[in-house]
Image (cartoon, rainbow, N blue to C red):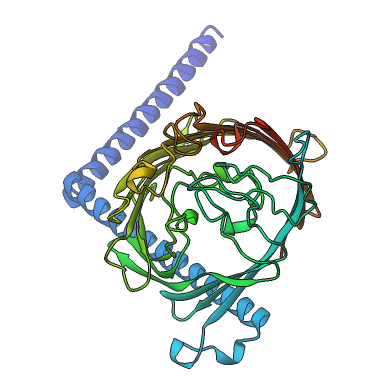
Length: 480
């Protein structure tokens, strides 16, 4: 009986020894297999070769992905182009004239139209009180001949006259912002003072161009051609053009149909526009190109003159624009200039225009232009020395009307002493303040805009009474 415990202890020790041996053999086996695998892998797949092989394979995969993306983008662009052409063809009824080439007809026709009407009246300007109702209908046609060649035509039908009942010396109804109220609309005795800023003639794209009631005129007509330059494009326009749509623009002050009505905020008068009192028509050649990594830069160059004198006595207009972000919001800065080569008015002008979305609902803008001009005695056409404008727009101030817009702006025009009123008068400037609120009805299909303008020293001080004007207006705009 005394040997029983000894036998049990010996058995337990034997079991423990066996387990230890098994663990040792197991781990020796694991280590041996690992070393063998590592040796084989090192012999059969050297590290440098593996790295090179995988790098090459990854590069090939990346190239294939890029090619697939390019093909996908190309196919999507082709699909969008085909859909757009089919829609245009259906809407304009030219499907029977389609084809792969412009030789058998136009590939597509796009038509845009809009109607704008403005009613204005003076307030407290006896005996010069006036009121008028003017308007026009604009039709824009674009004929796609090939993928790179378009023909365009813009027609305007006036429903009332925009001519002036009086004019300032050198600043007539077709001059630098001329265009007071026509006498045939509610005229009382006396004349209505003209303004340098063209306060009353801001109807559509015509600006200060004088036309008769009910007249139809061709505003623009020409050819648009686009070609590739490396990774960018070059666009060239030729024909009867309006440079005011392409030079010195501003996001918040550049469309009399929907934004500020006063011409001062649309077309800087210190620029000698080809449609000013010199009588030039707008026959021109205009080209532009976007470039940069994100195409954030754009260069415009245009040459405008009378037919038959295209390369003589012309006006050169240019503009360099940059679009980017400031504090995470969109900003655009444009630097522009003009050179008039006419013998009787060799002059130049230049300016800067900037617009910026300060917040998601507030946009601000500023623009200044200076003109190295000739005096009227020396035959100068444009008597404006400088002008500047600044303002802001506020979108969605009323919570229930997120698309409505409030705009306020102030502008100033200055000319040499005696340019407008004679040497005896000290006034040579005009100050303009405009306020508007644009209501959008039916998602913008109808836009109603009440507005008020205050003009100090109208006509550059040409009239002693009144020395200021208040204009109340109501604009209706219908795009369709």
